[in-house]
Every structure is written in C-alpha cells, then in structure tokens.
Length: 385
Image (cartoon, rainbow, N blue to C red; front, side, top):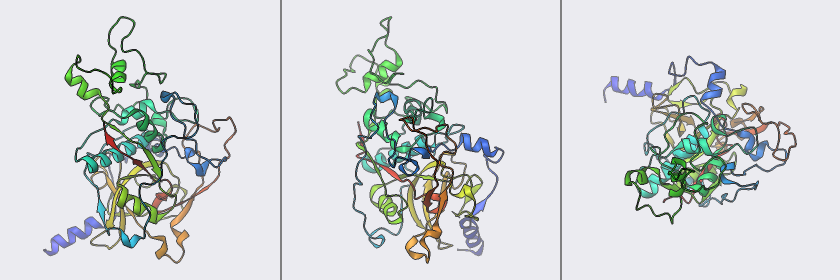
C-alpha cells in the first residue's frame, strides 16, 4: 500500500462532519420531518409503569396489552462467546423517509427485510407506507401514528396480525393520508362495492385470506398485491444492557433501536460520538433506526455499532452511521456512558394516558452513544407467506 493510499484510508476512517441535503433545513423542520420515534409509548415514560401496546384501530382491538410480545429467542451469554465483528449490511437498498416522521416504519421494515433475507436468501422490498397508513398512535392523540410517529413494537404487532405488502403494491408517498388497504374501520369488507365492482382496497383485503381463490384474477395483480411476509411477534431487548444488545445482533439479526439523532444530520463518515455529552439533544430520544452489525475500525481501533438510517444513501456512509460502541464493564464509571432524556413528551401531541389520566413527564435514564441502548426490539418468527 502506497503512502497516499494509507493517508486516504486514515482520512476516511476519522470522523467527518459536513454539508449534505439536510443542511439547509431548520431544527424544527428536521424534528418534524426526519425523525418520528414516539418514546411516550415506552414503559419507562409511563406513570403507570407499563407500556401502552394496544393495536391500531385497523385491528379493531380494545386490548391494552400486546398479544404478540414474546421472549428473546436466544440466551444471553458472555461477550467473549460472540463474534468479534458481524455485519448484515446491504441486504436491501437504503430508503429515504423524506418529509415525514416515519422512522418507526422504515426501521421496522428494514429489520424485517434483513431477517427475511437472512432466513430465505430472498430480498423482498416491503412497504413502509402500509404501516404509516394503517398503524395508529394508541394514545388516542388524534389520528394515525403515521408521520407524527409511533414505535416498532406497534409496527410488528400490526405485521403479526395482518402481514405486510411489497413496496410495489403500496409505494411510499411520505403521506399518512393514503388509505389503509384494510379499510378505514379495520374490518374486512365484502370484495365488491355497491355497483358490484371489485375495489382496490377490498381486493387487497381478500388476498390476505388464505382460502381466497385467486384463479380468476389477473396474475400480475395477485403477485403484486398479496401479503408476502408476517412475523409471530416481537421481543424487547433489555433496556440499557450492552451485553444483551450484543447478543441480539450476533444471534438474532438486525435490531431496531431508538436514539437521539439531532446531532447526526451533518455526519459524513467515521465512528461517531457526540463531542459534548452535556447537551440535552444528545440524550433526547427521537429517532428509530436499525443496528445491522458491530465491529472495530481498522485504522483508529475504535469499536462501533453499524447502524442503518432512513435518510437516503447520500447521507453518511452510504446511508449508514457507525456509532461508538462502549462496553460499560471497561469503564471506571459505567454511568459515564449514560445520560437522561428530560423531555419525554417532546415532539408528540399527547398528554393523556388511554384511561384519560394525565401523563406526568419524568426524566428517563438512557445509555450508549446518543442513548441507543434504551429501547431495542427485534421481530421474532419471521416468515414469507
């Protein structure tokens, strides 16, 4: 390797921040458009001590407990038993959520796509728009979660009950006013409208039934519009637990996480850690993304998490960010890798619990670089339909 090549490698491995397609947006625009994690749904932010995990109105359920929450599908073992590095990168194309707070849908779909590719060898490009159109914010804050945000748990709950379409069947519009393919009231409808014609939404609903006879329908429409994947449920990885997340990535596959992303927008490359961890924005959870691996930088020797984002392939390292990975057991003070999210209701319109009681905001301890260890979740029992 020539000296010039060595210098180029070193430069590319050192943290770089710069100008990109997000630079001209205001802080308010960035918060409104490019984030979308509704942390108020997490148990840590609830005064009742339990998370609100009711399904969307499209599922016609009044239950406040999830029927899809499952145990982790692996045992948590010592770090030494895990691979020193692992990557699930480039299984599916990087997407761009655009001007819609739909990170929760994109991260859920990306994780599901990754798990499907790992298990089947087939790359299915799935529809985040279906989640945005169909999954409500269960805190009854007036309308869909959609572009105002919700969580991966509710996304996987929906997919467990209904499955998910391909992207080509319901393309992304960055709009939560697009009609849900299950219909507006959550019930399966008769396949024909009042004039006896087959409606698009009704046809899609019928395709979700295994006993539906598709012989008399156009083959291309069948292939494009039928559900292609489901999950048995989801599992929460223990909060603020480095070893648990390492196990989840190594043994389970891609994991959806939440993080405080307001300091990421100018990231271009390298292993990222915020320069000033005393700033509130460093711990204010607001974004859902996917851990697709971990490793150690060849040049700097820094450990990192490989994180897939949804701001387009032109952002960061071809759509990825490498977040500094710190094992708290190696620190004199493990809490030095933690902070407090002091704005639990920031960015959402809801101030009440489903029972009508007022939510009392409280600060919550979050750990890892930009709080990324605080709320990991992964799909369980992923399969193609």
